[in-house]
Length: 166
Image 1 (cartoon, one colour):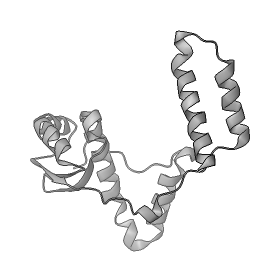
Image 2 (cartoon, rainbow, N blue to C red):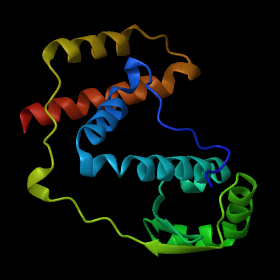
Image 3 (tube, helix red, strand yellow):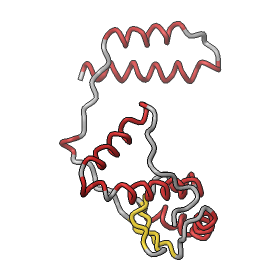
Image 4 (cartoon, one colour):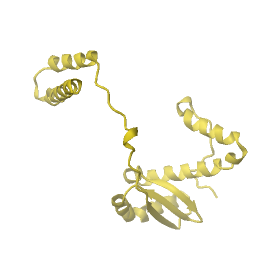
């Protein structure tokens, strides 16, 4: 039985082209089309979990939900420890929303470090951009309210000059 919050896939506005494109792709292939109900169901469950624990669940993901057993992917052990304390609340909220969750397991999945060869190098700002920031810096009134912005602009300009020299 689908939970009350579940809604089948509907065509959305152009701002959601990627979701629409993915759904069309899944529908266009017979074997992949069979996955669409599961994907939609998992997305609805992810949304309901995020609604129950918005601050904590932003970094988490639903890995599996079968036979009442929910498996959540957690990025680190610290978050897993905090989330573990909130599992009764999460389970209660999901039951209230119509999901038959009998148990929740946490699985820590540490992200792989970025390959340094793939890290992009930041380009220095153009002379026109530096000139605009410099004009803004000198055009601001010397008031306590503007001081933080003026300091930040000064650091930015100094850093960009060092980048161009070095």
